[in-house]
Image (cartoon, rainbow, N blue to C red; front, top):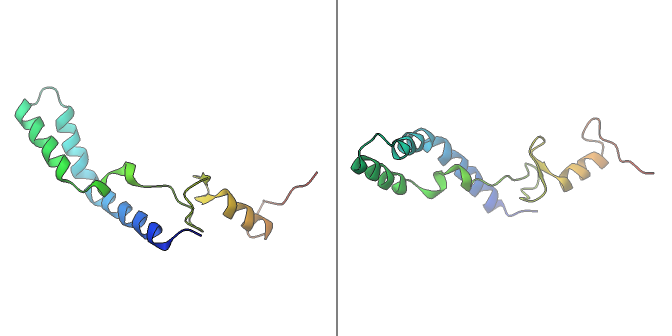
Length: 101
């Protein structure tokens, strides 16, 4: 079972990403614009650096919705392989049955 702190921290990061997404995209567009003056691009780069680090999308970690586990994560199901196996064995996920041969 993952620490509750890490799950909450990840949720906080998701909120920050949503909050700063538009501003971050606008500043990135200015920095990548070759036609913009150099001082304007530099100023945009400094403003981008002042934004919170956790407001960047790459800081979000995919975590299992059930256990909070960060590894072996299935994006489609939003859960880890271990949680999927447990719920499947208990018959709580329709269409998944334990197989044996």
